[in-house]
Length: 256
Ligand SMILES: O=P(O)(O)OC[C@@H](O)[C@@H](O)c1c[nH]c2ccccc12
Image (cartoon, rainbow, N blue to C red):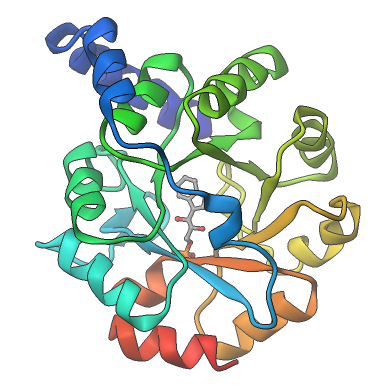
């Protein structure tokens, strides 16, 4: 499944590239105001921080919410105390777009993450051109040389990479890159199985000084507390926020 998600994302990127050249996107990327200091926004603190996700649907869960106005949802996330906004820009299975990201960027002061299946430089440049401050890199989807190249480009553009892992081996590869922001996704993107305890089994291997992000499988304040107790600095939440009242849910989660 992960392979087909990546293949679909690359196909869609090649359609966009036929309409807008890499050189064009590159100059738009360089013309943007500098990316925000994501590591400062997500730095470990007395209480857990939340990356709140704009997510319409997913291959494992189907349709979640219509989200006619992603910018309004992002403003609600900001009001509710989120530290960063994640925008799913994958169109086929997640119903997102780069236009969603641009709209969110224009509406909030917080850092914005491009959440997609990024596997080539063009997608990184598009992210910056749309105003992203962070880009997700999924270790399972990328051989180490490509992962290293994309990580380098993200950094060169002044952005931050959220490097996503799902095993001890993948975590080693993320650490080898020098990643400063590492996520452990409870969801296996090939089988869609959830393992909420995976974060806890890997957290100790994440070097100090690296920000630890627990991704997926948060439904209740107890789930946030579970990840926090296991060492999470940051929790990334989608479904529970788009299907409930975003401000009330965030307030409740941040109280835990
Ligand atoms: O809706 P949830 O279970 O709160 O999960 C959010 C986020 O972790 C999930 O959307 C996600 C994590 N990594 C990804 C990679 C691609 C697409 C989606 C994701």
